[in-house]
Image 1: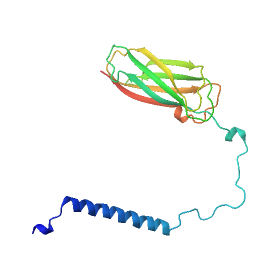
Image 2: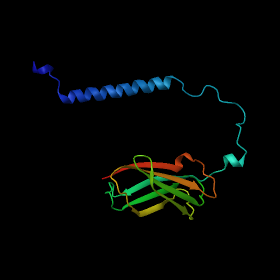
Image 3: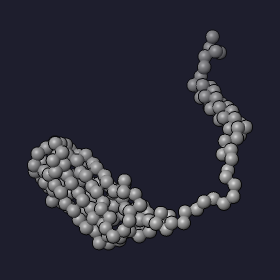
Image 4: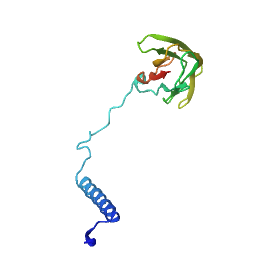
Length: 170
């Protein structure tokens, strides 16, 4: 009777053997079927010749919104920091950062625009906005909305120029 009782070790081995066998069957099946494109175009590939569309560009994005302390207390100041990063492959020019804090009803309770004169090199991150003066009187849920406004350069992707973060005030 005790000879047919499965031990946990044999169950693990059986599971590992099943996974290895499944990986082997799938790899043989993928190797047997040709998943490459059936017909590649012959001759020269058409290339973009317009510099306006094919030139490398800068791309400044909002990389982080930091609130200190994490849960601010009503009627006490808290810090708000916004970090921007150039994820493009050329240097970015001047840009402005617009920060808006909205209450639960969607009404703006704080708004500020800061212009950044320094250019961001490719891959560089910068503390674009910092303040310790924000004071919210009422507890509740708030939302920080940040928008980066490029000035003097063309941003390759405007979709990543906006970011929001929701936080609670107790």
